[in-house]
Amino acid sequence: MKKTDTAGPAALALLAATALAAALTMTLVSCSAKKDAAYGASSASFAAMDMADEEMAYDDDAEYIMAGKEAKAMAPEGPAAVEGQNPPLAPEPQKAPESYERKLIKTGHVSLEVQSLAEVKAGVESWVQKYGGYIASSDEGSNSATFTVKVPSERFEDAMGETASFGKVTNKNVSSKDVTDRYYDLKSRLETKRIMQDRLENYLKSAKDIKDMLEIESKLNDVTADLEAMQGQLNRLSAQISFSDITVFARLKPKHTDQGFQLPDVGSRFSDLLGNIVYFFVGLLFVVIYVVIFGVPIVLILALLYWLCFGRIGLVRKLFARLRKQ
View 1: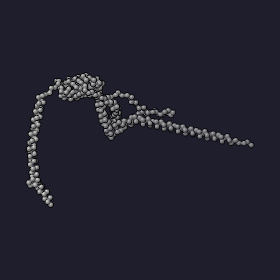
View 2 (view 1 turned 90 degrees about the horizontal axis):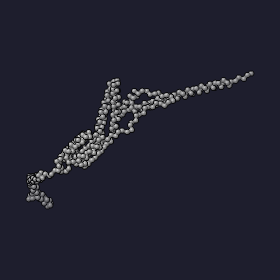
View 3 (view 1 turned 60 degrees about the vertical axis):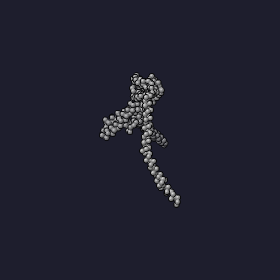
View 4 (view 1 turned 90 degrees about the vertical axis):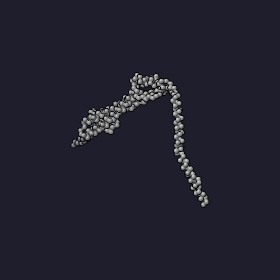
């Protein structure tokens, strides 16, 4: 009798089960890897959108952030993440320039001792015209005059150096104020406000109902008001930077006039002396009159009180005498 071999079919069944388990494991691993890759790509896309929102958010003096919303709505879709490649990155922010042109407000003051105020006035007028400036204000007196002029800043040093030709310099002062940061900060804020104004105007054109229209108009009015105020500040600051102030104070020598040395007026001094003497005696006369009018009645009242209390009648004296006897 032949012996039946049962080991062959069992081995074949075991190999088939092992192959099936390996195939299922590879399928699960592949699906998990695809899900992880898709999740990483979506996370990177959201991160890029958040970075873009932060770059487009304009929150300077505004109570709302609308630029980021529009950027998200209007920006084209980025390239999809491909398995095996790095996810797309958000665009890098634009770098600011490393250096700016320095902005300075220059002021100068000079005090002079001069021979003639009329000559100084004529000299200042021609001097300002020579340097392309103008006289902002002037104050003229009998023995002194003050002129505040504005000249282009690029010619400030030359103009200050020429002030010595008007007379003898007794004091000279030059100062400057650095407003570079303030100037460029205002310019940057203005650009931001203009961008927001343009976008609010676009929003207003596409408003669907009255409520949205009124809300956008209110915000647009606020942005426009801020824009005009900041533009005025920038204009004033630019004017101060472009034109420097120089104050010229001119004073005549002591005892001098425009005609030369002033002699003392003896006649007027003598008249002043006589006038002071007359005023003294008039004042003394009024003092005597006041004493007679008000002093005599006061003296009489005091004498009457003494006579009643301590004189012949002596009411107070008699009262003290009775008290002593008791």
